[in-house]
Length: 146
Image (cartoon, rainbow, N blue to C red):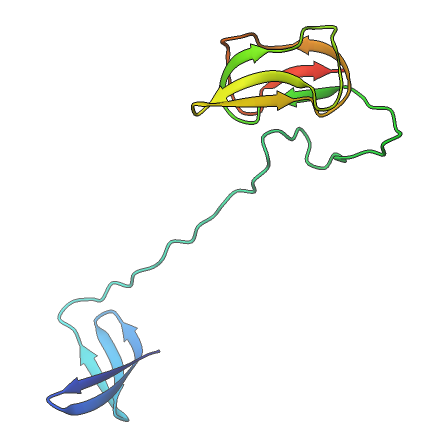
């Protein structure tokens, strides 16, 4: 039910629209009920309902996998993935290099900005999947650290 207040020729009217079916509306004006017929059918506007898919980061292989481990536990192989699409400007490591957490691995140009990709774990570089000048997409595995 929608309520409106009108002032017509100095007279105030309180109007409540009770129901609208096709081209007939039931309204109440200052307590008196009326049935108003329109010359055409009223089309109700409906706001579309947005249905969104569940968002899962493209860098996660399995969302149910535990993200952290205890600091003293041995670390397994790890993948360094591209955080966004871009072009490889420089690869700072080669296969066989020993890297520590925080070491610079790759410089990636994305949206006219240079982004430095650092190692998030310590270990030996097992594979480098891209070279200077290659284009990468978000989530591509750039380097494997074992």
